Length: 459
Image 1: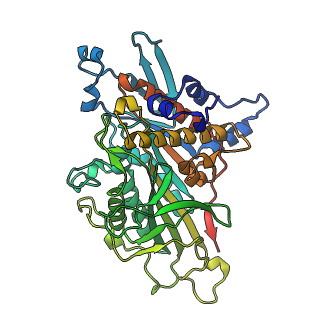
Image 2: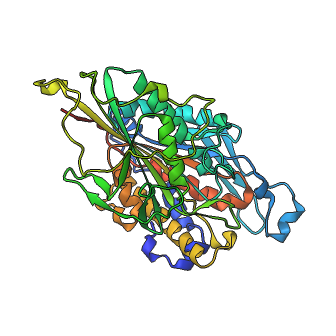
Image 3: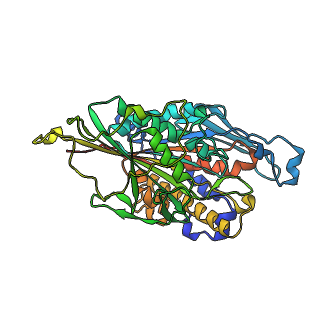
């Protein structure tokens, strides 16, 4: 039975994990039909190939050895209970006094061990960027408890001087900067198409949406609250929204750096740099035939970020505009009097989502406004699980509007985008309940039956 978020009290959301009933519902297999043929099975597999779930087990970290449990001091090394059996299987096995033994396995499309580097994770993401240039919408989402490595996976390591992207850690760069580099590399390899790339960054904080690029300086407090609107075509858009044109990976990461300095963060007992909001970075791509060589250049290969080049620390100025409800159907690079076939535009959207981590107030030690943040984080993640549960069971009503997070991601969750969910989990015994919750969420996500993605092209 799926428990609606509205039925949860503030105390239960902040102090308790998802109940066992919900975890078990996450693990239910979709109903089998005895009369399905081999052709139907192959079709179902093809239908599901775009609902991808990966799992990344982070290494044991120094703060894992810190515990307020007096009984834990007798054992200085934290017990590791989550293991990668192979490249597709995770096993959670532990035995705790006063608790029933746990021995569960979960299967995903890809499982990463603690020693697997960032480049290996991105290697499995790279094909999605090729799909983006073909006109397919793509969404990559990191999910997990607080301190499980979501922001590291998506953005890379932090630095106290430069809290976003240290220039000397190229081997540790996360998916966002690597995706930016790969996108502009692919653009530069196809001179027959002229590309326009726009970036927008929002955060969902306490169930409100804020535009992190609405201010011109990285020290101002974002004050533009946004809403989710439905376009004439039935798609969801955030409005008002600041979109900024970029011509290189370097410019793209300037904006990301500026936006991240405005993201809600707070130190808690569980995590020194706890994200208090869900971050959504959207890269909108429009390509047209490069018929007119004198037309505005959409990408400049000379500006591509090189491995040894430091990340800039100041945001790009002078290129911001507010997004219009719909993209123009004209092609500025098309020859006068050209036919419709010569003016084909390809529109696609890449969403990179770093979710805030679920947490227990009793562990994180939050009170006051921080406790309120925890409540909203847990509610929105519960709403996300409810949406996936409704999709997996093919219900007639999908509760997207129960949370601003699921509402803004509606097109990615239930639409025709290629969706990749990366589960980030801790291997430690003291986090076993949260790890099982995250793995159960991933099992539920894999059950969602999705239609074939459709490229966004316009003539």
